[in-house]
Amino acid sequence: MRQATGRGAPCPSARQVSWWLLRAEADLEEQQRAFVQELQRQSPELATATTLVRTFAEMIRERQAENWSAWLEQVQQPGVARELQAFAAGLQADEAAVKAALTLPWSNGQVEGQINRLKTLKRQLYGRAGFGLLRTRFLHRG
Image (cartoon, rainbow, N blue to C red; front, side, top):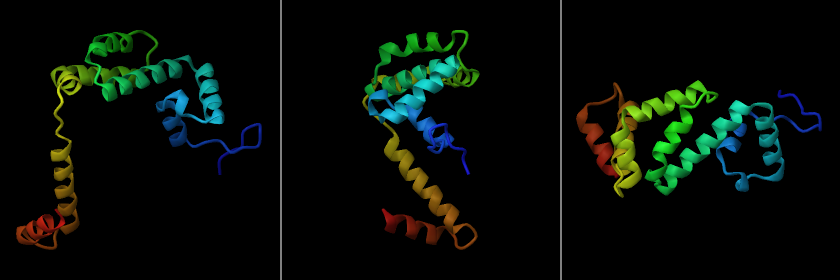
């Protein structure tokens, strides 16, 4: 059981806090916003990471390719969490794909969804039947 805070309310789970940190402050309830602000006050590294993650999410949602270089520079500054720097380094390794995602109107989301569905069906049928049953199940669900 989670310990209660000083006010008698139960502490939120790590998952809840993670989502609060990712959401825009305007979308948070007053109690959630106060909790996040106190957390950021106690951990400047967390405050920096939160700002960078929110900026990245907005850049992806709004397709702001012009902010890509500035964001990368901010992530490489001292005091930024190593995990976030590693994430940025991974993105930078495939920079062409990131820039394409930020500038082009096309998405491979539909293809990836179909591949995911096919793999899920394959896992469900593993060891039960051959390709014929898999083909039938896949085509009938579509």
